[in-house]
Amino acid sequence: MDKELIIVLDFGGQYNQLIARRVREAGVYCEVHPYTMPLEMLLAKNPKGIILTGGPNSVYDMESPHYDKELFSAGIPILGICYGAQLLAWALSGKVETAPVSEYGKTEITVCGKGGILQDVDDTTIMWMSHTDYIAEVPEGFAVTASTPVCPVAAMEHAAKKLYAVQFHPEVTHSVQGSQVLSAFLYGPCGCSGDWKMDAFVENTIAEIRRKVGDGKALCALSGGVDSSVAAVMMSKAIGKQLTCVFVDHGLLRKHEGDEVEAVFGPAGPYNLNFVRVNAQQRFYDKLAGITEPEEKRKIIGEEFIRVFEEEAQKIGAVDFLVQGTIYPDLIESGLGDSAVIKSHHNVGGLPDYVDFKEIIEPLRMLFKDEVRRAGLELGIPEYLVFRQPFPGPGLGIRIVGEVTAEKVQMVQDADAIYREEIAAAGLDKEVNQYFAALTNMRSVGVMGDFRTYDYAVALRGVTTSDFMTAEAAKLPWELIEKVTTRIINEVDHVNRVFYDCTGKPPGTIEFE
Image (cartoon, rainbow, N blue to C red; front, side, top):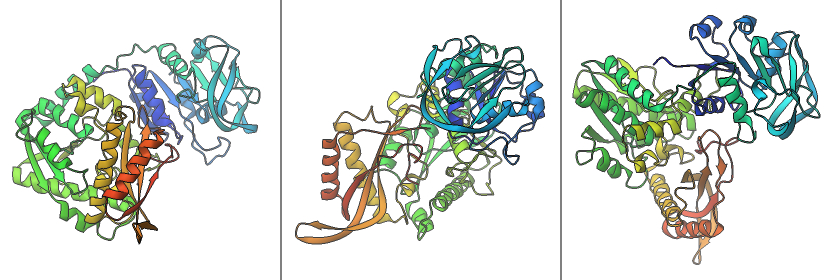
């Protein structure tokens, strides 16, 4: 699909996905690439603009990430954010030094140069700062456009060369007018028109799948979650009965979930799919026996999924393509380019070295979660499916801390079912964006009746988020937590304590492992 493109060059900052999300929210397509991407490859993509991200390093340390200086004379509009701002200044002979006073969190900035990318920003506003270095001297030809009491260059620009830099993070929600800064960059110097439309994406992707598959056959790894469901329906619209959807019940699903998925996508469902259910519970339990390390569990589950799909493909015969519901955060969190691996997603970093398919098709691999939901609505998928709670491919395998056993799966299924039931009864199922029960590996002494117990602790997780890249712990009513706790301890065998997880993302992740 021929579309306007903004490239985000990733220098290792924690908000880099968020920059891409904000750009797409503004109606412009955006991709994240590592700073190691060669200049000629970058220029060949013909971007309308480039954003240099934040990062944990100091530009004056020569071992830190840098970039070809010719980038800054290529005539492409560039916006440097935090480390990216310092890198821009450093590359053009400005001075970057350790700041006398570091700035973290919400900070009032004063705009001293209206116009450019600060044209829609108030004279004073709140932006999010996170830096220990600062631009001590701007390069020749640059004008300072914003400052704080301790940061003389909170923003600078060279309008003639379309080079812009901000020390703050406009992409985070704490930056009150951050979206105005990004939009001014996109629709001002970059000259974007905002052609990133979901209906066009769906239509073009279906046509592209049709061309790629031709007369061939494809097998879709269907979990029943939002991502794989949207991928399955999109593939079905593209190639019809050439697609077979294989649902693997690995014994790590939520309570009754296997039957629920079959009811929606199986022969009695509305989608007329070639649907195969594989009950492989014991097979996965055997593979996970004795395994406690989270990454190892993810990789074992990912490989075993593939082996089941290969076996089913052999039964179908002549299947060249494997279809997965991989989305963009999966790629980045699994280590896209030089990005740090946060966790291996079973369908990305968890793939084995050898996969017996001609090609893997991932029609949603460049979409964020909310974009996947919009694509699902475009495809006519009912809202109750499109807005279903996210559920990880490795399932309860990563909601059970430590070794996975059938007994532990039963415990967490029962606890999770109680929690979900009470959340819905309290009318909070639409307000809390993701919630679940996990089984910790902690055992402690308790008293039930007149007897001593030595049993497990369940942790409840609930978060509010708009994009699943950052999240805050949901502030649930105490009466609700108390009721859920009582029910779990009374109704779930071998559980004698319940905790509520108050950690945000970052520093935590939404899932436990």
